[in-house]
Length: 170
Ligand code: NI
Image 1 (cartoon, rainbow, N blue to C red):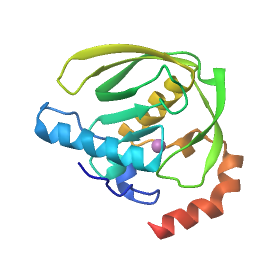
Image 2 (image 1 turned 90 degrees about the horizontal axis):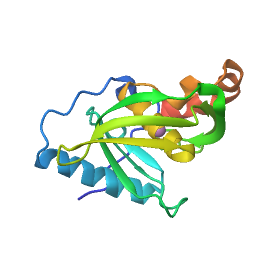
Image 3 (image 1 turned 30 degrees about the horizontal axis):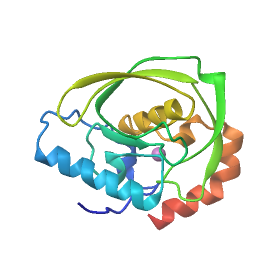
């Protein structure tokens, strides 16, 4: 449908808690279509609706560029059913709302998520590694949480100048 501008850190909408999707209608399909177009254009691994300014509990992940066994996935009204211990896995992470910033972030190495697809069918997915990381990162967006919230105070202090720059540009 359309490539939408991505909301950058500093915009207060990124701190909002997204609302549950009530109807699996054309509006939802159009939203997901825009998310897909926007993610492809920006070559990211995942994108949440709030990142294009729509506070609905929807995100997509696409790891097909880094893992041939992966495909584009759509998550509507997702719930994290269980996750392994947070400190298990540390890996460099970025976020399309923080252009140019990449930092090692600790996350669970495995997660189990329950969600609905575009047609309203419920599914359960168990993910590990990068797929789990992408899901947990995007899920955070629905709660108004950002990857900087997972960084140590030292790292955030180190990034202070660059974060300020993003904030003032948005
Ligand atoms: Ni992000």
